[in-house]
Length: 202
Picture (spheres, rainbow, N blue to C red):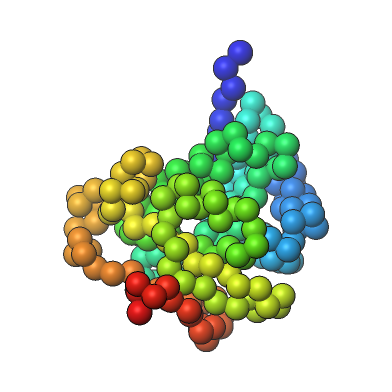
């Protein structure tokens, strides 16, 4: 039997299927809050209503989700991504990233995917393997850990090899060599913590 994967924005789910997604979001913060951050359920409700919460199913079994945000500089921020421990390392994370790039970023002319990941998490290996580039780090707001900034330019060859690349026709306004302009993550608090850049970028 061939497994089937379905990735879908939660706002398109029937109401009776939204409740399990909400529960798995709450559960993920309980078991992996040190990696995801601790968010109230209202934050997931807000992203759900905006179309910024994405669920992934394997054979109709809910195995994970991703939360994103798109800023005014055409950057798509991956705010959270989580896959059930028993469903990890089976392409679910990659499938979520593909969906975000192809269905959320590119249609809105976003050219950059970006995220922060604490430096003590094995997920950093995943981001590097996907072709993301390390851009620097900042201190976390609460636990005071180093948070590494990873980005991938959807116009670059690395994105092409993953099937994520944005074609010139999709992004006619962006010069091909424009460097990323990294904006603050928080829409409510625009004070960006000090970024520490790798030597090569100074």
